[in-house]
Amino acid sequence: MALGDTRQALIVRALVNRRRSPIESLLWMAVLLIVPTVLRMMLDNGALGRPFVTYWPTLLIASLALELPYALAYTVIAALLAQRLFGGELWFKEVDGLRLLFFALFVFSGGLTVIIGGMLRQTMQRIAEVNVQQENYNRELRHRVRNMLTLIQALASRGPRATSAMDFYKEFSLRIEGLAAASDLLQIGAEAEGRLPQMVRDTVAPFDRDGRIRLSGEPCLLPAGSCIPLIMALHELCTNAVKYGALSGERGHVELSWFIGPSGSTLYMLWAEKGGPPVTPPTHEGIGMKLLMPQPGLDGAELNFDAAGVWCEIRIEGARALHH
Image 1: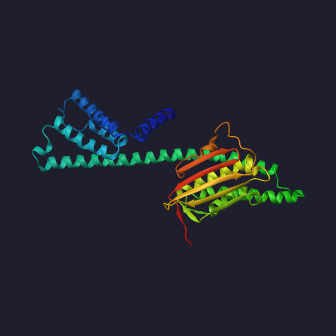
Image 2: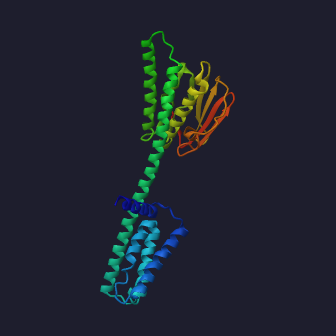
Image 3: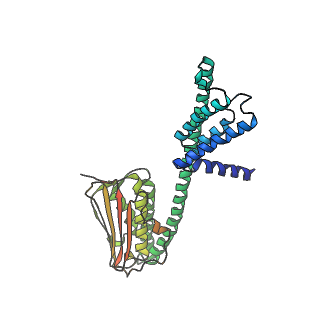
């Protein structure tokens, strides 16, 4: 039973979730018209009346497989074809009250079927999109957890310097609390617009040892869809800087700056590491590298492993300056 249910679900998803081009939609309409027409001709050629009986199943399939305009067009064409081939002359050739009533009932019931099927189709497509998005978030979350554990280990092994175990515990606890506060920011961007510099300052705070991440930029507001991608990109840059880059030693620092371009709606951000160990490009690209690539919310992202220090340029559309 479970296997059968799974197969049925897969068939319905394949029918509903596929985005079809206009040509594919027209081919579907043709097939859905030909199959019930041939079937009815083979059965009785309309001798038993009820001209639309073989078209109802295909009408339901059309409502699930096709976009609403194509499904409605199919309904009209199927009604005209069925009436002409299996219902005698066209209903409007000789109009009377009974014919008008029956055709109105068909239009109502057929249109209702198409509209309900279209609503179901849109709902299932939205569920599929949410499932894909959820899987992407889960994959990124697993990466964030692994990164965070590595970062905690790095913070513990490289400091803080303390004269006693209690001092070490207090200072290390503050760093862990700061890291947790930055992680909480990942929930803010999904609900509200992000304000700079506050969002950037809170994101990099747990990584900022002795003020070595230097921020400069005008106050501005980011669109909601850019908050999470930017926070995760900065988190990735900070993590790599602490593990391998300018923040892994005692002398390096990071200059993080941003400004609104001449268009008034484009944010340009530059991450530049200086004074750290010589940089060598990674031998393979992990999932963390995908956070530093163009994606929804980050309209542009360029990462460069310059020998003198990593730098990354980020571009976000839809930002606006905040004037005090």
